[in-house]
Length: 248
Image (tube, rainbow, N blue to C red; front, side):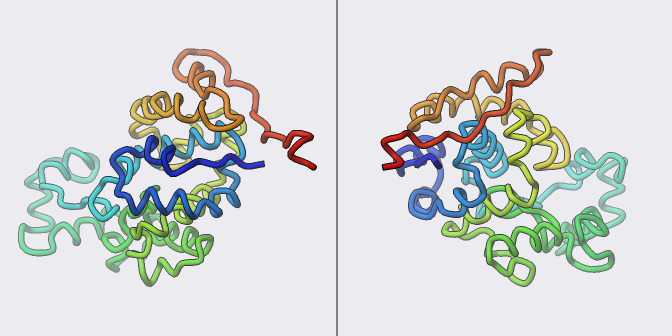
Protein backbone atom coordinates (compact mmCIF):
# COMPACT_ATOMS: atom_id res chain seq x y z
CA UNK A 1 0.00 0.00 0.00
CA UNK A 2 1.18 3.52 -0.73
CA UNK A 3 -0.06 6.83 0.62
CA UNK A 4 -1.66 9.38 -1.66
CA UNK A 5 -0.64 13.01 -1.25
CA UNK A 6 -3.14 15.43 -2.77
CA UNK A 7 -2.28 18.61 -4.62
CA UNK A 8 -3.36 20.74 -1.65
CA UNK A 9 -1.15 18.65 0.65
CA UNK A 10 1.81 19.07 -1.69
CA UNK A 11 1.16 22.80 -1.62
CA UNK A 12 1.20 22.72 2.19
CA UNK A 13 4.48 20.80 2.16
CA UNK A 14 6.13 23.15 -0.37
CA UNK A 15 4.24 26.43 0.15
CA UNK A 16 6.60 28.59 -1.94
CA UNK A 17 7.20 26.18 -4.83
CA UNK A 18 6.10 27.16 -8.35
CA UNK A 19 2.73 25.72 -9.32
CA UNK A 20 4.32 23.58 -12.05
CA UNK A 21 6.30 21.75 -9.37
CA UNK A 22 3.20 21.13 -7.26
CA UNK A 23 1.29 19.89 -10.30
CA UNK A 24 4.09 17.52 -11.22
CA UNK A 25 4.17 15.91 -7.78
CA UNK A 26 0.37 15.72 -7.59
CA UNK A 27 -0.10 14.20 -11.05
CA UNK A 28 3.05 12.13 -11.49
CA UNK A 29 3.80 10.41 -8.18
CA UNK A 30 4.43 7.02 -9.79
CA UNK A 31 8.24 7.29 -9.52
CA UNK A 32 7.92 8.04 -5.80
CA UNK A 33 5.75 4.95 -5.38
CA UNK A 34 8.17 2.78 -7.35
CA UNK A 35 11.10 3.98 -5.21
CA UNK A 36 9.13 3.09 -2.07
CA UNK A 37 9.11 6.65 -0.72
CA UNK A 38 5.33 6.67 -0.22
CA UNK A 39 5.20 3.37 1.66
CA UNK A 40 5.89 4.60 5.20
CA UNK A 41 5.59 7.79 7.20
CA UNK A 42 9.32 7.78 7.94
CA UNK A 43 10.35 7.53 4.30
CA UNK A 44 8.00 10.37 3.38
CA UNK A 45 9.30 12.51 6.24
CA UNK A 46 12.98 11.92 5.48
CA UNK A 47 12.65 12.44 1.74
CA UNK A 48 10.62 15.63 1.92
CA UNK A 49 12.64 17.31 4.67
CA UNK A 50 15.91 16.67 2.87
CA UNK A 51 14.79 17.73 -0.58
CA UNK A 52 13.14 20.83 0.89
CA UNK A 53 16.42 21.81 2.51
CA UNK A 54 18.49 21.17 -0.60
CA UNK A 55 16.48 23.39 -2.94
CA UNK A 56 14.77 25.80 -0.59
CA UNK A 57 11.44 24.10 -1.10
CA UNK A 58 11.94 24.26 -4.89
CA UNK A 59 12.53 28.00 -4.84
CA UNK A 60 16.18 28.36 -5.85
CA UNK A 61 16.67 29.92 -9.27
CA UNK A 62 16.30 27.36 -12.06
CA UNK A 63 16.80 24.64 -9.44
CA UNK A 64 20.52 25.07 -10.05
CA UNK A 65 23.36 25.57 -7.58
CA UNK A 66 24.46 29.20 -7.48
CA UNK A 67 28.20 29.31 -8.18
CA UNK A 68 28.45 33.10 -8.25
CA UNK A 69 30.73 33.13 -5.23
CA UNK A 70 32.92 36.06 -4.36
CA UNK A 71 36.59 35.30 -3.83
CA UNK A 72 36.04 35.96 -0.11
CA UNK A 73 33.19 33.48 0.07
CA UNK A 74 35.14 30.85 -1.82
CA UNK A 75 38.01 31.12 0.67
CA UNK A 76 35.50 30.85 3.52
CA UNK A 77 33.81 27.72 2.16
CA UNK A 78 37.05 25.93 1.16
CA UNK A 79 39.69 27.13 3.64
CA UNK A 80 41.80 24.03 3.12
CA UNK A 81 42.19 25.00 -0.54
CA UNK A 82 42.37 28.78 -0.31
CA UNK A 83 43.87 30.56 2.68
CA UNK A 84 42.49 33.92 1.59
CA UNK A 85 40.54 35.74 -1.10
CA UNK A 86 43.85 36.95 -2.49
CA UNK A 87 44.89 33.35 -3.09
CA UNK A 88 41.65 32.73 -5.00
CA UNK A 89 42.21 35.78 -7.19
CA UNK A 90 45.83 34.90 -7.82
CA UNK A 91 44.87 31.42 -8.94
CA UNK A 92 41.80 32.12 -11.08
CA UNK A 93 41.99 35.81 -11.83
CA UNK A 94 38.98 38.11 -11.90
CA UNK A 95 38.04 38.03 -15.56
CA UNK A 96 35.09 36.37 -17.25
CA UNK A 97 34.73 32.67 -16.43
CA UNK A 98 36.93 32.66 -13.33
CA UNK A 99 34.24 30.97 -11.23
CA UNK A 100 33.84 28.18 -13.75
CA UNK A 101 37.60 27.60 -13.70
CA UNK A 102 37.47 27.53 -9.91
CA UNK A 103 34.67 24.96 -9.80
CA UNK A 104 36.38 22.86 -12.46
CA UNK A 105 39.26 22.56 -10.02
CA UNK A 106 37.27 22.32 -6.77
CA UNK A 107 34.91 19.62 -8.05
CA UNK A 108 37.38 18.07 -10.48
CA UNK A 109 38.70 14.52 -10.09
CA UNK A 110 35.92 13.49 -7.69
CA UNK A 111 32.25 12.48 -7.90
CA UNK A 112 33.12 10.98 -11.27
CA UNK A 113 34.30 14.31 -12.69
CA UNK A 114 37.26 14.03 -15.03
CA UNK A 115 40.34 16.09 -14.18
CA UNK A 116 41.36 18.67 -16.75
CA UNK A 117 37.80 19.04 -18.05
CA UNK A 118 34.86 21.36 -17.41
CA UNK A 119 32.98 18.60 -15.54
CA UNK A 120 33.32 20.43 -12.24
CA UNK A 121 31.34 23.46 -13.39
CA UNK A 122 29.08 21.47 -15.73
CA UNK A 123 27.79 18.95 -13.19
CA UNK A 124 26.96 21.33 -10.34
CA UNK A 125 23.94 20.76 -8.12
CA UNK A 126 20.63 20.61 -9.97
CA UNK A 127 17.06 19.54 -9.34
CA UNK A 128 15.29 19.12 -6.03
CA UNK A 129 17.92 16.80 -4.51
CA UNK A 130 20.76 18.90 -5.98
CA UNK A 131 22.36 16.08 -7.95
CA UNK A 132 26.09 16.82 -8.19
CA UNK A 133 28.97 15.28 -10.11
CA UNK A 134 29.16 13.31 -13.33
CA UNK A 135 28.53 10.03 -11.49
CA UNK A 136 25.43 11.48 -9.87
CA UNK A 137 24.05 12.64 -13.20
CA UNK A 138 24.75 9.24 -14.71
CA UNK A 139 23.16 7.19 -11.92
CA UNK A 140 20.14 9.46 -11.41
CA UNK A 141 19.61 9.88 -15.13
CA UNK A 142 19.65 6.14 -15.75
CA UNK A 143 17.04 5.54 -13.07
CA UNK A 144 14.88 8.46 -14.17
CA UNK A 145 15.07 7.55 -17.86
CA UNK A 146 16.79 10.83 -18.71
CA UNK A 147 20.13 11.46 -20.43
CA UNK A 148 21.41 13.84 -17.78
CA UNK A 149 25.08 13.39 -18.64
CA UNK A 150 24.61 14.93 -22.08
CA UNK A 151 21.74 17.19 -21.03
CA UNK A 152 22.22 18.16 -17.37
CA UNK A 153 19.58 20.92 -17.58
CA UNK A 154 16.89 18.24 -17.85
CA UNK A 155 17.32 17.80 -14.10
CA UNK A 156 15.88 21.29 -13.56
CA UNK A 157 12.57 20.91 -15.40
CA UNK A 158 9.48 20.95 -13.16
CA UNK A 159 7.87 17.93 -14.78
CA UNK A 160 10.93 15.80 -13.99
CA UNK A 161 11.17 16.56 -10.27
CA UNK A 162 9.25 13.51 -8.96
CA UNK A 163 11.40 11.22 -11.10
CA UNK A 164 14.62 13.03 -10.12
CA UNK A 165 13.82 12.78 -6.41
CA UNK A 166 12.83 9.12 -6.69
CA UNK A 167 15.94 8.26 -8.72
CA UNK A 168 18.24 10.06 -6.29
CA UNK A 169 16.60 8.33 -3.31
CA UNK A 170 16.96 4.93 -4.97
CA UNK A 171 20.57 5.56 -6.05
CA UNK A 172 21.59 6.45 -2.52
CA UNK A 173 19.69 3.48 -1.05
CA UNK A 174 17.89 5.70 1.45
CA UNK A 175 14.99 3.37 2.22
CA UNK A 176 17.24 1.37 4.53
CA UNK A 177 18.17 4.42 6.59
CA UNK A 178 14.55 5.50 6.87
CA UNK A 179 13.43 2.01 7.84
CA UNK A 180 16.12 1.96 10.53
CA UNK A 181 14.95 5.35 11.81
CA UNK A 182 18.45 6.73 11.20
CA UNK A 183 18.01 10.31 10.03
CA UNK A 184 21.69 11.15 10.52
CA UNK A 185 22.74 8.33 8.19
CA UNK A 186 20.21 9.52 5.64
CA UNK A 187 21.60 13.06 5.70
CA UNK A 188 25.19 11.82 5.43
CA UNK A 189 24.33 9.58 2.50
CA UNK A 190 22.48 12.45 0.84
CA UNK A 191 25.22 15.08 0.91
CA UNK A 192 28.34 13.43 2.30
CA UNK A 193 28.13 15.08 5.72
CA UNK A 194 25.74 16.76 8.11
CA UNK A 195 25.49 20.13 6.38
CA UNK A 196 22.23 21.85 7.32
CA UNK A 197 21.25 19.15 9.80
CA UNK A 198 19.30 21.44 12.12
CA UNK A 199 17.37 22.99 9.25
CA UNK A 200 16.48 19.53 7.96
CA UNK A 201 15.24 18.56 11.43
CA UNK A 202 13.23 21.78 11.70
CA UNK A 203 11.67 21.19 8.30
CA UNK A 204 10.66 17.69 9.32
CA UNK A 205 9.04 19.03 12.48
CA UNK A 206 7.22 21.65 10.44
CA UNK A 207 5.92 19.00 8.05
CA UNK A 208 4.69 16.76 10.84
CA UNK A 209 1.14 18.15 11.09
CA UNK A 210 0.71 17.70 7.33
CA UNK A 211 2.20 14.21 7.22
CA UNK A 212 0.12 13.24 10.24
CA UNK A 213 -3.08 14.08 8.35
CA UNK A 214 -2.25 11.77 5.46
CA UNK A 215 -4.40 8.65 5.44
CA UNK A 216 -2.99 5.97 7.76
CA UNK A 217 0.13 8.01 8.53
CA UNK A 218 0.97 8.70 12.16
CA UNK A 219 3.15 11.43 13.64
CA UNK A 220 6.81 11.60 12.62
CA UNK A 221 7.85 13.37 15.80
CA UNK A 222 8.93 10.18 17.65
CA UNK A 223 11.45 9.68 14.87
CA UNK A 224 12.99 13.03 15.73
CA UNK A 225 13.17 12.60 19.49
CA UNK A 226 16.41 10.61 19.53
CA UNK A 227 18.38 13.02 17.32
CA UNK A 228 20.85 14.79 19.56
CA UNK A 229 19.02 13.59 22.64
CA UNK A 230 20.97 10.46 23.42
CA UNK A 231 17.94 8.25 22.90
CA UNK A 232 18.07 5.10 20.78
CA UNK A 233 16.37 5.31 17.39
CA UNK A 234 12.83 4.04 17.09
CA UNK A 235 12.06 0.59 15.78
CA UNK A 236 11.86 0.33 11.99
CA UNK A 237 8.48 1.25 10.57
CA UNK A 238 6.98 -1.44 8.36
CA UNK A 239 4.94 -0.54 5.30
CA UNK A 240 1.24 -0.23 6.03
CA UNK A 241 -0.84 -3.28 5.18
CA UNK A 242 -4.18 -3.04 3.35
CA UNK A 243 -7.27 -3.63 5.43
CA UNK A 244 -9.62 -6.54 4.82
CA UNK A 245 -12.06 -4.15 3.14
CA UNK A 246 -9.37 -2.96 0.75
CA UNK A 247 -8.57 -6.52 -0.28
CA UNK A 248 -12.12 -7.16 -1.48
